[in-house]
Image (cartoon, rainbow, N blue to C red; front, side, top):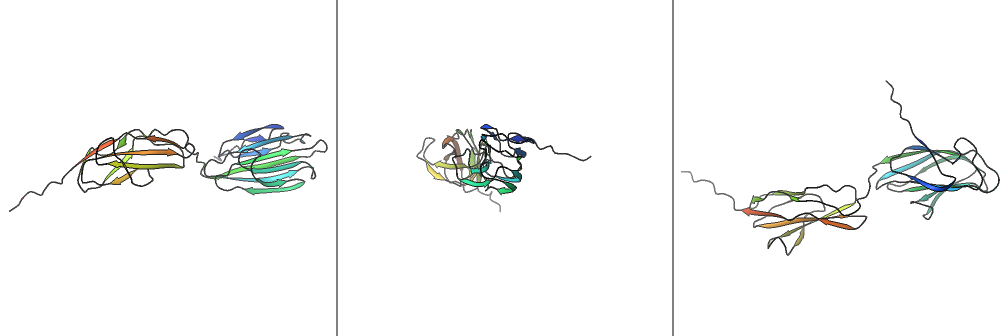
Length: 232
């Protein structure tokens, strides 16, 4: 059986604005769709890119060349850098950078109209959403006891959803309340070894805060390795 993917059709509003989440492939037209657009249009559509989505805009347009404009801006809204302007009759072919949210604006003056535009909006890349709020990493996971000198891996009970997350591990050889020394990689796991009882925790920070949450302290009490039994 042949599978058919239906791509939704959306419009840039006559006035005001709307927005669509990263990964929403669509056909985007002016407010009138298949009919001629109206005078005095001034609306825009925000196409979210998340943290890695790449937006491509292709299609045809037909507007009053002097005065009715399709503009593409960097970011959400029309306050960002103007990247592209289309007017008259032609073909659009624009691709944004990875993670670059785009705004498509359409304006028309008080006289003369046309067929408007019909653009295919397609996404590629990873639609990652930046981490937001305060992370809750939960408990620090790992062994309660381990032999001296042998490696073990620490982790976190709860995963933090989103992208652009930073991790900082800490160790204390004095007590569960510190003093603390920053150690380890910027990662959700940490492989280490020890020769004395130690305590560990990790601070997890979201890029859009920055908001930091700390995992519960884990005590890891090392024991000296057993000696091999004597054999005659």
